[in-house]
Amino acid sequence: MEMLDAADLRPAPLPGVEMTFTLAGVPSADVNRALYAMVGARVCWTDRFPWTHADWRAWVERPELSTWLAMAEGTIAGFFELEAQPGGDTEIHLVGLTPAFVGRGYGGYLVEQCTRRAWQRGELWAAGSGPASRVWLRTSTLDHPNAMANYRRRGFKVAAETTGPKLVPDPRVAPWPLPHDPRSASRRFQEEELIT
Image 1 (tube, rainbow, N blue to C red):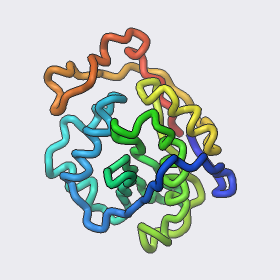
Image 2: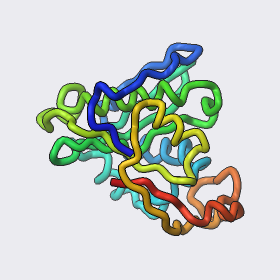
Image 3: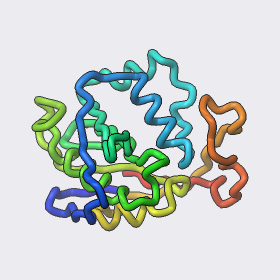
Image 4: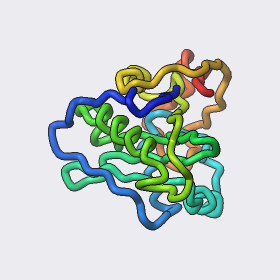
């Protein structure tokens, strides 16, 4: 999915309590790995399971990557990772809520604020990378059931669509517990991934 103009971003309703966003000033493989597990376990984020600590460090310590923490009620409510790419592209790699905040009206505001910061590359983060000309992300049928509608409500449009299989690990051998066995839902054996 993509957004080609910052003016296309549509605001979300404010959540019931204040939600703040902080750029992680010190890159931390441990923080990103923990948030990936906490947020992603419910929606089958598994691509980084085989990453070593060195892989995580190499990922988060790049100047073009920023990690943002979302706080609400004194707790980490979610996070997102943004990457400044060549030619003005900015990719939203990950965006999601921690389990305690799912279903409480925070998701739209999280995606809105994530997208606002994606458009502010070169100003708030990724100094020297120049302005964003396009913000894009990937999603799939394994994502939260409301994710696609949320992205559309914020102003994203489908850029391309592909269908293909995704190997989903046995949750008994995953590096952190998954809430259910994602392999059991037959419709989820085929992942539809929207990419550019």
